[in-house]
Image (tube, rainbow, N blue to C red):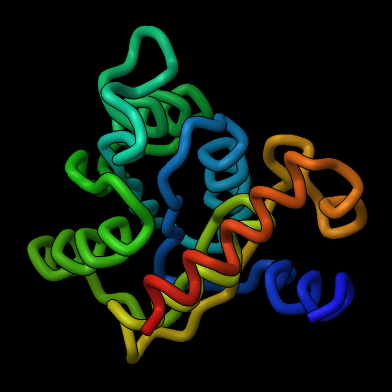
Length: 179
């Protein structure tokens, strides 16, 4: 694959559309929850599902004052005016596949109806998120709305060693996890 093919495959975000829920995929960047709150306030969905303990690559959540990704994202959502009654989630998952699987459990346990959903994630993480959430929610129509995290974007990911490493890591993880 060349740079254009990799870019077109990995970076798949689109404009938001009306949905039943917004799924915020785990991580330690506040932009994910801030974007979810913005979409919530614009009326794209009235339910926000967040998840995550912390990455299996770490021993703890990296943001001081928070034990899990769930705690971090919930606090940001609340500070950005999302009603506590509209926030659902879990604090056990350690990687993206578990985020999707455990989100399915939360949806089922709470009797939520989700036919259309928005996935909010980092732009270079979009393809894997979509594939894994489609596996856990085969009957749901997804839209992926992204933000550029860690200074990695569709336009220049290949210009730094860090960007190349993260994007190529996504390709590897798609092959490993999305079978």
